[in-house]
Length: 330
Image (cartoon, rainbow, N blue to C red):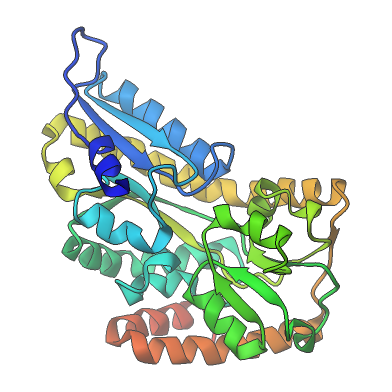
């Protein structure tokens, strides 16, 4: 039933009766609530596309994964045309395309410049891989760096052992295994009920998602370990894309280019605002000591090396260039 509904929702052609009606409609899968800044950005994108194309293309948003797809399914669902357009977090789909998790490796970037540099270096390879999955990226956005939310203070690596933590990607699972965390990968929508039921006592995500989840209702501490600053792709099915007139495609690409710059620049502001909201609601934002940071960096180096060995030559080449530019040894 879910697949049938998704297919029905993804019908491309919608015949209009007047000049203001869209000639093509895409239903867009969004992972996060309507109030999340990624979803708000997608709404701006949809509004600008409709205006730039004179109503030739209308993108209808479905936030909160309301079309019924989970993160790891999104690459295939878009490839098969079950979704015409979807927001796809890179780290969530590494089961189908391991190299896409490059931009979700632990502690690989320490600031916004390094986040974007890594994506730019990976972008040509990403494009080749995505073409094999019958899709292309219109624009990307980035999350603020992820920290951990807990019921007790976490000040050293040893404090992580035994936590029952929600994670959202393979990096989180690998980090959990390396540190003694009982990590469980689950959709964002399932986290709050799991917390209430006692199945989880912690989660790793950004300050923004912590606000979305009202984390202060069940957790007390946010420790910004900055494990990852994940990239989200807004991908379109190539069959749907190629059906658009050339002038419409050109207009969409122009809007998309503007959106990418806008969304990457927004992440830092959203992090600062969200941390303030967490504190205003009684959550303790705990600093990371130099000793704790050194422990985390050592875990990150080991995990990245193990991942690169499995990911193959393309991943290793990109990482080598990234390390050369940033002056890091690994």
